[in-house]
Length: 276
Image (cartoon, rainbow, N blue to C red; front, top):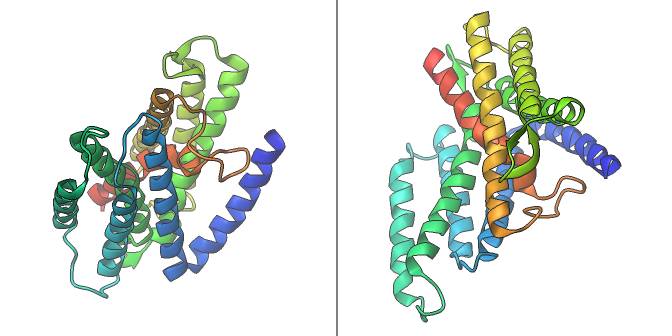
């Protein structure tokens, strides 16, 4: 299992490096694909609970929102109102209930709510990959470098939390959600995140953040990373499944691999928005 994880990780890093360097439509295609796969996994997960979300509409809606934001950022279309887009999707979801059919076999309220939750949870949070990658500071695009910060933080937090917990873990962190996670492991992951953000500032364009601000950002991202992991663990425990998918050998599905990153991305973006 460990060999599979390492092999998949190496291939993934090389592919990620290539995509982020090329950027453009290749980057957009990769993000849209991740969103579609993640939404499909989420809807399959809730289906295990007997819920019947509008999978097709949910997946296309999530991809549509990301595409419109990307085109707007690039100036290809007029500025896209994300809130208006979500409201339009909600209208379509609600109206689709009128032609649903047998209401005895499913719940219109629950199905609609879960479909929209997937769009916001998966599509809405993956959207920040696009926003960070296109981030400008003082008229200069720093997003191509900045995008590595949430990715590296997620990796170091997950890695150090695992090995610290494995070697020093004694006290359970959330036994009802993820029995193997420990408080010691969480502190190890948090320390790794703080250290990484503090040091990565020497390479990334973080001149406008002093050491104190980097430590705060590292702490916020380290906490967010582990909360994102726990949230998806809670979903899987509720659905009584081990992994959200089997797309990535040794890692599971898209949500298994990117659950922590989904929580880290918005905090990264808004922290830099505030300071810039």
